[in-house]
Image (cartoon, rainbow, N blue to C red; front, side, top):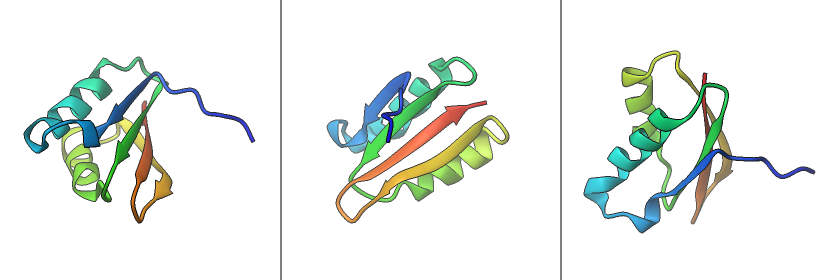
Length: 79
């Protein structure tokens, strides 16, 4: 099994709640098309996925790499 290469990584557990979504969106926006960021969180980031679906429709791919119960990891690729 190979290790994925991520252009960026956001560990959302390191940010206060008010900053998490802003940091994640800014990190995604800075990606080059075709690159992937890793999101690490302590809960299912489903509300964030819905935000992306509304604000960035057709611009991303979302893949769960780990689904709890303590850690969630998501690969978010910029199309």
